[in-house]
Length: 292
Image (cartoon, rainbow, N blue to C red):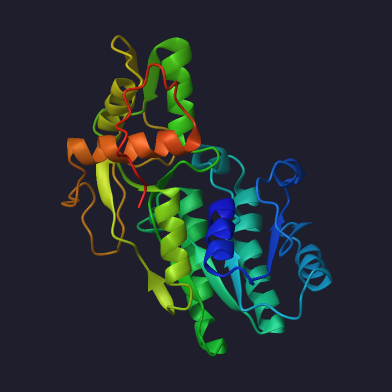
């Protein structure tokens, strides 16, 4: 997400200056964007001093906005590592807000549909993060904003690359429940939504469509021209829902805005093409596929 958002900002605003902050030195070393107006700094959001040093030592004279994308995200792992969930998703968010207050900057906080009616630690901590950001929005002239969205297709560590690997290597796909559904968006759509609404105070939710995970698996297999594969049911993991909600008033599993088969194929084909996640000699990806 950070890479896509940085690319978008530099494309839309060629004179913009960006500081990219993360605790992953390997990811920074492999960062694909080389631009004179982009600096990368190592820091940990859960360490307030580390964050402050990265921001102040690299500043070009202030920040219009801080995009807070950092999060501990692996829900099953966080169930057994609650300290990491709290330190990154709650303490880290408060550290970002404190820094923004000192620098007189606006915060854009990336949240998740799992913050709605949460049943796992990841969802609870993201929900607390939302409330922290929204409770301090009146402290800034432009106010802070929260972006709540579903599963991203094409981001680092997302479901799609892992699925493609098991389909190609094992002719197998793993699923926790045959009725499970999720909201799906391409990373470029989320990045564009955040950028476009970066000064839209309060809670921001993009238009999203849902699809059953098993339909996504079958569509990807079809695009890869894999006709014989096994779907292995491994059972629901700790803290995992069958269906997600996007608002507190929505009804789980009753999403009416669902992908058609053609829309899902178009979305997945475009995402796989953009990520280079398929063999062009075998994948029947529609040439018209584009990510909007």
